[in-house]
Length: 175
Image (cartoon, rainbow, N blue to C red):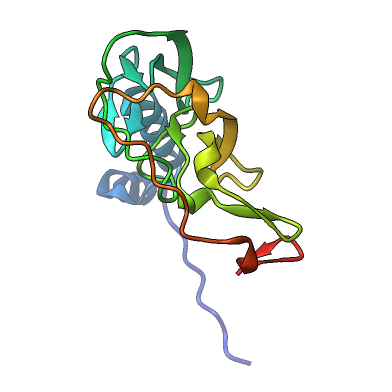
């Protein structure tokens, strides 16, 4: 049976490895420091545009404040109704919100949000949708209130009705 050589490092050799960047003790602390600093400076996303923590935007006749939740993640908090014009783009909830909107952001629904209850189609344009986090951490749009609560600025066009029909619904599934 071949003999496996034993490697023995002296204290000066271990110190040299640490200085060379191969030390293992500092890596977790440095990684945690990077994660913490990223969370605190990230800010919130609205339609793909970053906004600093503490910023207030206006969308659909309501103020939204960018803040951090208890875990440090960026989050929009809906505030008071506002009569000011929108200060951000509002493309509607037309795509996956990941990398475009932070938690709490709201948008008017679109055909992207269509779903079925039994064999009946529920149009996404009937509601306003809010970004929420699923149990697995992914972001998705969830109906928050009726579309009548969204104020469309002059010149802003409400999302078009869906092109889908109930014929695309089968036992609660949208084909």
